[in-house]
Image 1 (spheres, one colour):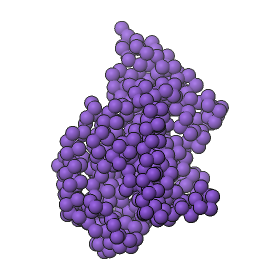
Image 2 (spheres, rainbow, N blue to C red):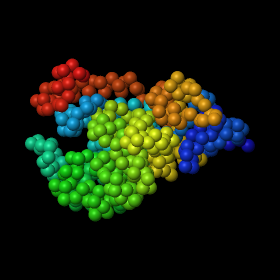
Image 3 (cartoon, rainbow, N blue to C red):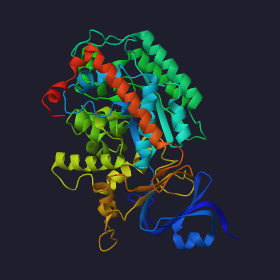
Image 4 (cartoon, rainbow, N blue to C red):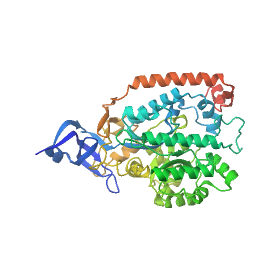
Length: 478
């Protein structure tokens, strides 16, 4: 008697990510029932064993687990591209814009960023933002998987007027408590929501933006509620300077003394971590997010991910914020991660294509605490998968012998536009490049209107004279 499947994906170049490699299966198939994978195997066997409501023919395509973007700031898509090619990108490029982002504009940025990432094959988005009403609802409505981190900091509610580079931040306990209360309330509403598709992590913005006491309070609440902590760690020389001024310690030593370095922590960037510090953090069980594109553009640095991995730590990939990185595209992050590390170590064998593909799938899933649920195509896991057209000129020809070239081509040649179909929790969200759960033209048009309104407010604000990019604008270079 045949088994039932809602959808049977057949005739694929299948990459399951099982084992220690990419788990390749020629002419592979995936049976999906409800929100989960019912079986994986040869097309001939699954077609014989299953009666399916729908057949998804993946002939000439690669089928992979959905990609995982482990660190995003989606509201900032509304000011995409305003903070490149400058020193002090936050203070002299982004800040004059961010002060004029209204709640409506922030939500328009999130919608735009979710659409962008989804179309490039990202099925799990680990977002880090203010918990505005409507933020989580966007993920619920579109149908992607989300790991949401409400931002917690103790910076003064009225802003940082008068603060200059090199000054110690003024921390306000009341602002910190209010942000923590909002994050806890958000987690109570949204953790394990949408049939478990939406989960929550607590998001202290950085160790230099909360007091020691409030950092410990975040840790205690996270332990009590079984939540991970998602935090920027050693993210720049500004942070290290703040930590040395306030505590007389660099970030890794400070967090180690606070017993923050354990497998509950998802540490983002480690831009300024030395190799010994990165090894210490990895040995403590911390997971790392590497944002190669963002940190390359805004800092010109290659973070110590290779050292972290060699010390036994899990590394996920993140796109960070589109105001500085311009795109949320895991294919871009995979390629830049491989190239930057090869260049850094002057070794073409460092970070091969198969390793960075695992960082965007199964290792990324493990890093963000979802390794038992997603990241590989295995019976019992959630049915999050993408279908990639290998007939696209830049991915052709697809060869299997004597050398299989599909994975290198995906990492070094794909742009994300080759993603044909996207499924999350057994539900098709994109079919033949058409989004099925969101009105893409309306999202883009709304974002354009909101962005133009922000630009008008920035132009009318005298603070815009601090923008570092005004000089190349005046010279006709932008």
